[in-house]
Length: 390
Image (cartoon, rainbow, N blue to C red; front, top):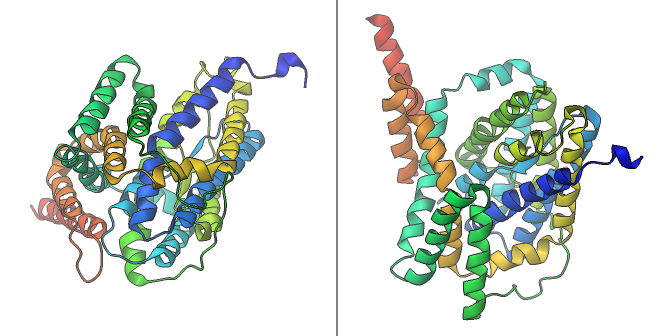
């Protein structure tokens, strides 16, 4: 390739910034999800390694083959859903739920009618369920104040200032500040036996109907509604015509194949994709796919060193992890609350969905995310039935 065909420096910087924001901003949530589901430190490292591989390799290949910047990410709302689980189902059962969610995504990509049906899910109810999942994490942020006022207040101040100075760098700045404080306290370390390179630790999936309803179905829905569909919108807004079925299929297949290693969901990115799909990343729209390739290659490097990167968060004090996770989810919670209230007619159903999900209630061994959706759909059906009768 001649030097004139090499991507400009802006392409490398855009891909690097997107990786820092995507990985650094929410890896604490991934670690917390693994811990909640009973994964060992080695299994959490495998989870992070598998996710980075699933983001890097398919994203680079799809960008090259389709000649559009395909930017993949892990499912942040899905990780929040997992971290909020109170059912104590165990890691192997959770992995089984990952497999089911991945297969549902594969079917959505293969069957166009399913994709169209998914797009008809009321946005208010889907946003309300996600908001109900995210709310407890943002509340835990403030519950740290009584026990560690200095750390919590300091990180909140960094977050607020950076959101107004350079919003995209708010979370990386919070991470730098957190590790600086923890280093001064002598609280930075790695779990015993942590190596230099990422590792994959397979687990035999265990399938359980309660996990399928409580974890797999909500995981599929929030990933589709909050990641894949917005990701397609970003690509269209950048002037591309993405093959929706093919992209959803490959994300679902990647998730299914890597699920035994702990990958809960690989999907299209939305926020980080915007960084890599605009003219700032590459002035030539027809050559902008190279940014997707660079982004994928950077994630493969991150996967190579996933063990120490994940280990830093695994060994982090619980309070610090809660503060970082809560701050990382402020923006998604804001977007979800806005979405759930956007349609006046659906607000009551959305609020019921939000309240049921945020309550954490578990009935018959089934978690609150499912019951939130159920209440919301019943409320919508009742309103429409009464309207039709009238």
